[in-house]
Image (cartoon, rainbow, N blue to C red; front, side, top):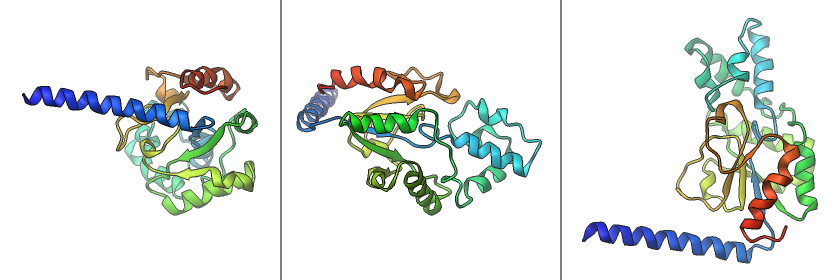
Length: 221
């Protein structure tokens, strides 16, 4: 009896989620593109390596450039982790990132297509206040003040509604096991062993990757 009830509840829950997605797509006049920041539109690793080499000229930057783990400190020997935390905790660190090639052009082009764009970024747990402040400073400098309202700072991205989430994190989990958006993995060494439903290797590919996804969701793009 109980297994049957559980299966029935699971089927109902899945139908309900499907109905909610269809309702959202029907109500949404245009797609909502959620885009991560660190190592997706900006180079976190470049800024980290630069500061690390300043502190330790003999630091092995290949540990970062070719890292296999998403969390940066997990790629370092124990004796280097305190330095990593110090670097990531410095005020201004998150404002110093260079934009990845083609990212700014792609973001503006999405707006020109009348797509809704939000920068959906998680603050580092070691650096809440300065990290958030730095992200706003970065957006103001590189995209302009009219982009500030497009920033969404959130630790749990599964709670955010959207059509697509472009993010370098290999797997995104949180309160909702089945979020509304489709995860497009932004290619980095530490996510290449992930079997992604969609992958963006360079910002020049944004249109060819996103357009078929949005069409499949029912948007006229």
